[in-house]
Image (cartoon, rainbow, N blue to C red; front, side):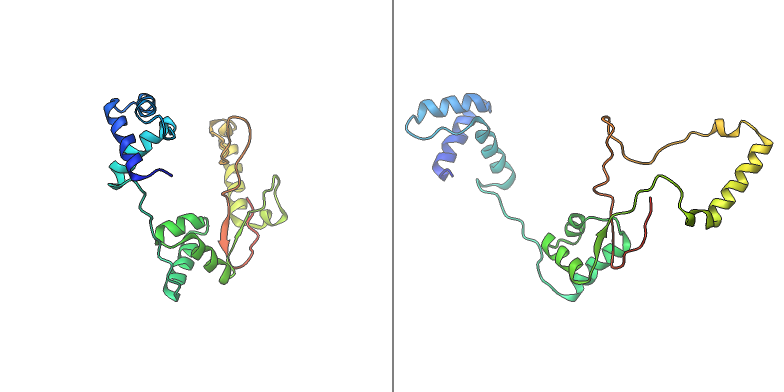
Length: 183
């Protein structure tokens, strides 16, 4: 940790060197050989802190940690509105601490469930009228136009990376009951 006088000296060297941090570090070392010379990035950070905060130290952001039923209700409403929202997003949206949001979810037995990944149809998939309607529609279209399927662009909705991996970590849903969500 540097004193305010040392930080002021660093800032003067940074400004005199034309805001070049490496030159400022050499200049600081020449002028103050007895004191510890900081890394060159420190000069840039001090200048940025002073321009953003108006002081050398960061201002701490405080979040609302008032635990009451209204805040708990707002957190639960966020989970009901969007079951796929993250704790961090709820915390940011409601200006509540992450810890409070996490504690509220635990108190009301909300859990981040991961969907079950399957690569085949399940027996329950055949019972859904939507799928039967789709198949009937496709059969009629194929009778009218035998090459109809060649005109459809088939896509995969998973997020894939260029190295072949798929990220499923943020794919969760918040609920107070485990329901068999299948993707």
